[in-house]
Length: 402
Image 1 (cartoon, one colour):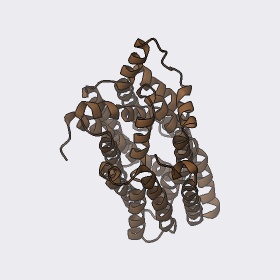
Image 2 (cartoon, rainbow, N blue to C red):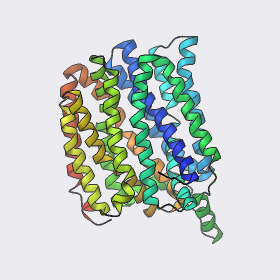
Image 3 (cartoon, rainbow, N blue to C red):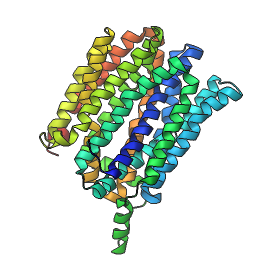
Image 4 (cartoon, rainbow, N blue to C red):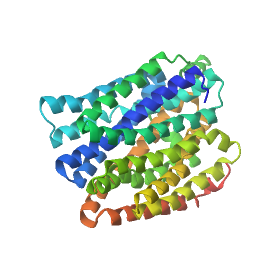
């Protein structure tokens, strides 16, 4: 794949940050389970570490629109690197306690949403600078993120088994620095800033408040329906990756199996994300949303039955394949329906909304596993996700053309 240098730099940052986060995603729960053997505490840490995203994302979106897209992206990745280094440093200096693990995870999670939001807003600028169609670039962006999640869990599992969970954090810290350096080298315009200056040059007043992100998502019926649907789906699905699957594979002492399943999910997602540009030219957005929701509802049921590893990996791949086009589809909808000077705040609020449900889901999932077991909990989560996806298809906004 020949990429324009500016596209390549953005995707290097996207890939490096995604790889660092995907390693951390399985390393932290594995570290907790090694030390405490408590799925409920693993769920609590996962839940609490999501809270900063809920609170910080709207502010991060505001910063993106006002300080600049590149500045926020670079700063977020540098701070993420420093926070990740705290795990091995504190482990060597004082030893890790449950409280210190919780606090470090909480601090580290403050910076991820800002970097994620900033890179999303940079897509329109890189598209303009590289003359690449925005739909295609959206797909490539989510495809590279998916590739990072293919290799990240496998790399994380290998690091856990070879150098230990604590030393794995040095690798993630280095990857966040790579992400920051790539954006510092990337030189593109800032369409959000340009749009704001154009509005103000005509004597009109640009909307500068944080609340505009909430207003746009609520007043646009289509974006509202999609956001609420994904909010519920994320609240049900994310606990499966952060609590259910780590607990299941830790019980059978198979970190490589956990890496394979999560990598299969990411692989399927990467295939259809990379293909989003091609797919969007042949399938309407309305039908693509339908295919995504139906495919996800069907694919998760076999996974919840926890079959043999080859079948579990195959089902995970098809779930990822079904869900892959959804993120670039959401990006395209925001980019085409929202003014450029508001992109950061809308992406930021949407990220915040997606963080809202998982904390409660993670805590309840951990408690459910301890009370009813992994199998019953996973099946219940799968049924809730499937029902939500199918109900979303009945809403008026998803039945209309968009």
